[in-house]
Image (cartoon, rainbow over all chains, first blue to last red; front, side, top):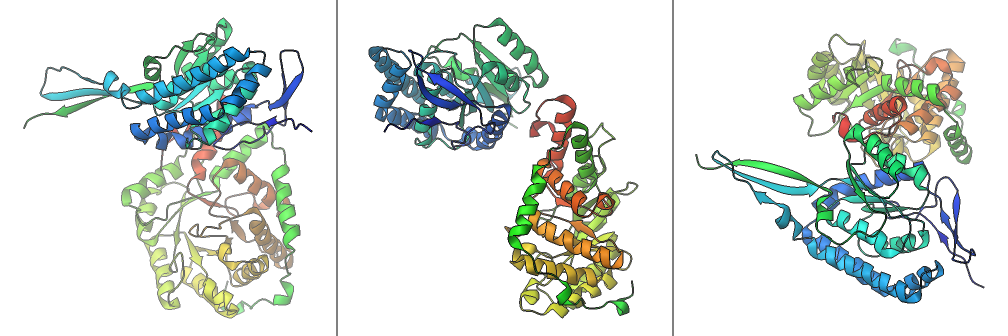
Length: 278
Length: 304
């Protein structure tokens, strides 16, 4: 007898069911029911914000070395479960060849950003010339709690390319996964066995129209990354984010190209004046 | 009340507690649906019932002053919120606190009697009460000797509470039972009855210094003791759960319980208090949420 898996949410390092009790049908390419996934409510989102806030202090202060090691570790664990991801992606109607390629790409992305963990600071810091007897230098620091609205469709690279630069920069993240809920939650299982501290990554599966306004309005979310081609979604996010001056980054509804500038998108630059002499 | 007319209670009138029943009943208070306006008024009421507390070795004059300011005006710019009922400090900080709350309705409560353990001779513990009252405390939060209670020396507890009440003079006496150390609901009920009979103005669950602090069932047992005393004598006694009440939702559940067990008469800060250090900001954040529809961040509220 085959047992159908129930896919839950990933909040604060645990896998709770949605408090609302609602489920989404996840259907394969022929319309057959693959599984039930949780349909996250606004309250689930708020719980995720609390978990992310709790985790952000420690993660933000973790050493570059540790963050890099943890990203490599995620890549290792993902490699170990390659077969499972391929099966799930194929069930979603992706060809086997493409699925293999997608998993490899996700692993490469993690290794790529893991490598940046102790380098982006040097790239984005500066010693600034000033006309007084001060050393003046600027360094990037994590923004804090970042909401990520992942690309709507697609497979693993879509999710990882949005998430990796955010967490390598020392932020904690709340991800609203795309419609491919199974891959997202299986990826959460990878995260939970990769020494990622609880709450640093939280993954919700649900409806964009219901949750995007919550991401935008919540005062304890410091930034939002929206992967969308929808004008109304962008406008709504921009308007509602103004209240607490959230940092908003708009990206296309597609995998993000690997680039250290995606790390910089969620950094705050701190400038220090240090007197010399006397 | 004169010490001479106090009588040691009859234990036969102190019922044993049905643990399962109490816990089940306490759980039901959490299932009430509290809607908009009611929620808002409950949140505001809870703010006025706060004993804003700092009981740390690291308390400084500056920290106490800052906390007192917060008690006077919890939400700057919104006079409809607060002030809190009292500030609760160590005896050495009473003078500072009394000066800082001068001219407002905020009272000064001081812990005393070798808080939190109570492990000292009665003589020194009473001296501490007198010292705190002399410094300007309006209320004294005493601890009972749990060790003696657990040894069965119930009369000693009765006597120490009565002696403290006398030493308080005009100040109100809150008796901390430290329910987390009394181990059973029967003990909690019996200790409540002793404290009430010995002249306590308030009974209070915990010091906040042991892992198990206030819980809904333990508070329910104590409320029942207050209810029975009221039915017998017509005298009201106050209740103060303390420790572990850190969010607004839980605070509202306590209010529901008080309302349903004791009735509306107890829903004022004269008869019900919350002892808490981190509850204030959560209440304020919930009030702002109700007003703006946006869930709030600790970044935008003063730390105290």
